Image (cartoon, rainbow, N blue to C red; front, side):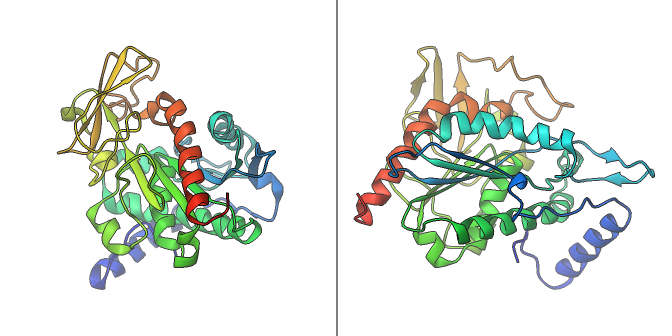
Length: 317
């Protein structure tokens, strides 16, 4: 079972019943069938057969919505054409830079809506995200069963998709972990509790290590850290791959510096004005919406580097 939080005793009982009460009052969309190819976006950009298999998880696209009979839903509906269209926008954009030289796979899933995160309540987020995380674990198990396991594995996700990456690292077994070139948590946190729950979360220390987790969040100043998303215990600068405060230059005009104290990226020379503030929650001093896009060239190159290093270690190249 892949769950969004590890709880014990009375806390487990409370979380279970809170989730059930929440779901009894809300509409739960039908689950995806991952044997159905329409539940996936698949892009094969690896004509030479020397790249990686990428499993990508999209972020949060939906707000709470109401069914025709007046019930509220806290989840995206993978059978709803509009919801699918929203998720596909991000899938296409991520595939544009991740798929060249690689095989890119992204599942549609019942991600929980923005309202869960707007509560700023960890229990509410964990309870509502459990359904979404179960979908992702099911999708990943299907993907893993089908793929050539002599190829390096990349797991990546943005925002709620980053949460899914963390949960997948808890979900996978040691054999699957041995196939991991890298996991990319883009715009979400890794907590000390996460690292205690699995040995599969190992913070990246540089540009070429494998079997590691790359995590970063971007702000204009540390005072703008949104704790529910970015209060992380690890971080790395995706421009120079340093874990200290050595500044890096991006696109000639942007300076990106990691705060070793808060493990977030502090940028100057970039306003992020193309990303509008959302309900006084996101893009307000933080630049959450930029995470997969601002550093896309760096990520594209690094996926290749880590996949190549994985192949060298496994004598496959």
